[in-house]
Image (cartoon, rainbow, N blue to C red; front, side):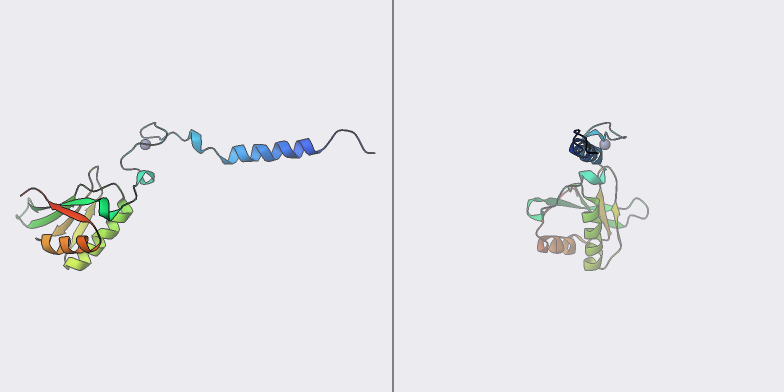
Length: 135
Ligand SMILES: [Zn+2]
């Protein structure tokens, strides 16, 4: 009951189709910016790898608007929320103070009080370069 039509062709076709269907990444336009690849500044997939040696962190001292308490602000760093959230924890532990990682368009780390010396010491230890900015 053997026929001449080769059965190989159909199996080859189905395996090819499988490869195509599993790779749809080239058609994922971002819903926010409509670009491919996405150019949104706050998209986790756009997080950059942090190389401390090439990163200059700016540190400034600000006065809280309410009550005029001093706040140390570390800002102007590359976009990588996970990395800097973790760094915020380290800074808080090192300085023994409270602090927040502010996830905004221009993310920044705020530490309560004048922590410039301590924060700089830790950042330098981690390999970062630091620069004081503002007042
Ligand atoms: Zn986008």
